[in-house]
Amino acid sequence: MEKRPETGNSLEEKYNDYEKTPVPAEARKTWLEQGMVWLGEGFGLSGLAVGGVLADGLPFREMCIVCVAGAFIVFLLATTCALVSAHTHLATSFNCRRAFGVGGAKLIGVIFCFCNFGWYAFQADLFGNTISSVVEQLGGPEIAPVLFTVLGGLAMSTTAIFGFKAIKRLSEIGLPLLFILCIAAVLKTGRLIPFEEIVSAGPVGNRISISAGISIVVGSFAVGIAMMGDFSRFCKSGKDCAIGISLGYFWGYIPVMMCGAFFTYAFRNWNVVEVMIVSLGMGVFGAVVLVLGQWTTNDNNLYGSVLGLMNTLDGVSRIPRMRLTLILGAVSTAIAALGVYRYFVDFLSVLGVFITPITGILIADFYICNRKSYDEEIGSVKYAVKWDALAAWAAASAVGLAMTERPVGLGLYSRLGDVVPVPVVCIAVAMLIYTAAQSYGSKLKCGAAECKKEGEE
Image (cartoon, rainbow, N blue to C red; front, side):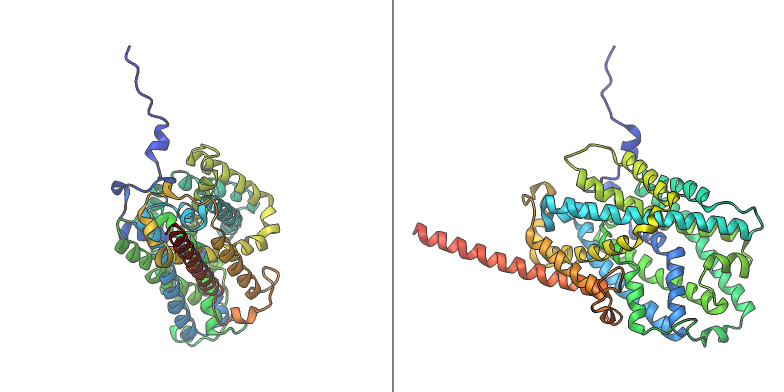
């Protein structure tokens, strides 16, 4: 009998996400396919919640200015960072090997993993509370949120397990429904409350400045910007990358925030679940769509967590991506169910400050310092650790902590953070320090080469 060749795990092969290798040409996507994924990340409860926060501190017209300005800054930063992976077609944590060295990138992978892993648990708990509230609001029995947290956490991990294809498909299903829900809710709100009254509304709560509002918008995507490469690596071209990101983070994100603000102005309530179900009576359709909206956001957290850990474990463990996703999904769901995440939410916020400078170093390395190295294979990286990158990262992180209010940060210059978005400052500081260090290192190498040449003569 002829022996069949071993083909490996067929399921892993079918849902191969090229987590350690460049995405091949046949697997790359157009701007529309990519844009649906990025729309799914922002077009959900988180985007509506950001709009509610803006309405709490700004009058309607200033809120509109902040939405446009904040989304434009997010779009610019996200595109600049995403184009790196659109060029190499590698995940963010693997691109970090060029900027931080192989060993340094493993440390970065751990930070990516823990930050996204923790926020997945946070969102899973929020998911459970949302479903429990919806069931009660619809006249159902009072059910402990922990049950829905466990079911939701495990369910949301399924799309991350099957990777980019499943995440994209869920977004294609959920986004049109969420769009229809928001349009219907806005029209119904307009019939209940005069539009002129909403437009002329002042802040619902304590007044904040326009610059503080922009900081809120940019800060809401600070971690996501750093990890844009995890999805932009699937782009067919830089043009597809830029257009897709504009669809998700500018043209799509602006109306989402405005809808959240609109409902807050109208009903003096930032809880979009209560607004949709109780105030507007959207019923089961509204409940299902809101759940899908949260799902399309949270599966990205687990996906990014796994890719970061895959880089860290590369050469140490050969555990497949799908199995690792299942493990991380189960563990983070357990953390959410036990409520343990509540004790390290501040810790997760600190990790967010540490992630932001990574964006600046990647941008500086790709666009300014070592552009040619990105045309070479990732296996050609010889550095174990690039200490100048780690030093720039540490310094920029310290600046971010100093500008962040207590208890997350040190609160030394927190007022400055209300004027200039902290993520933008961290990115700029990291770029300046890393570029200066690389320039100084190049001069030392040139000087050493000239001395060696003179000695040979």
